[in-house]
Image (cartoon, rainbow, N blue to C red; front, top):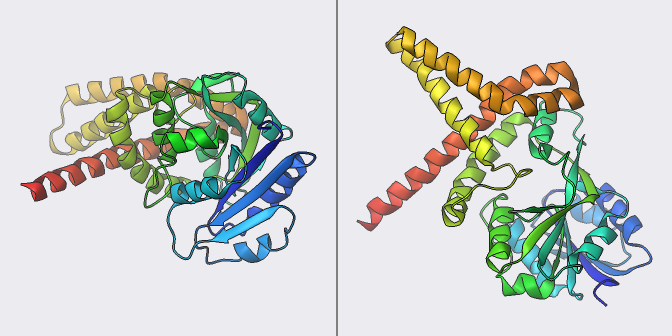
Length: 335
């Protein structure tokens, strides 16, 4: 039975610092059910394999010889899975109690559901870098007030999907680096007239990168995302990072910094007026997020968020530039 047997697929890559806690919780939550755990390691160079070797019960471990990317790893795990219900769990998350069971229950409640995903808790397992708290907030914002909702993208970190359906829609797309798979697969699910459900009674905690690492990742993710956005012709739903308000905020950041730069070469009162208006409008757009930041991490985080918002937006702008430059070069080479 699909509700009583399932395959848990855990992609790993240099996961020595998180895999033990991740697997301990998975095994604890999966007991009394028929399951298997498939760990596909993407050519790790650390102690990941050694740590996993201490977990012998119900674990199938495969280590790739060459790094292929998380999309490839997930597809590999799905291909060799014994059961028709697949649970994807990233190696750096800790699932909450009963979350696995709740994902499975909801997956087969309605024939229109293509995937069921968990919601992240506003909690940061990274303790050594304070700026990672801001990244946590940006990743979780919009989810704190959600109940059961439909999302435009699949929750790749922790989700359930039927194996046959995943195969039918072409599986996970894989890139040279992680990021973007959730938007692409979510879009494919929607094309097949099914929906991505996020449920409030399935949660998880995870580790967040510092602001600098997130900035670099945003450039890469935006570059990949533009192609998906052009196909969808619409932004993502609330709770996703790629919303229309995020795009508008990024445009305002570009205008604000352009006006500041213009003032160095051509000072005019109208420049300052436009600059003031731009800052006010952006503050209005980001007001709810700033209150959200203060609620969970205090006044200091609210102030830091005014800076962090600009860094994230600059990353998005650079990602768009990167996408455009690549297209121009490609077009020039064809000519």
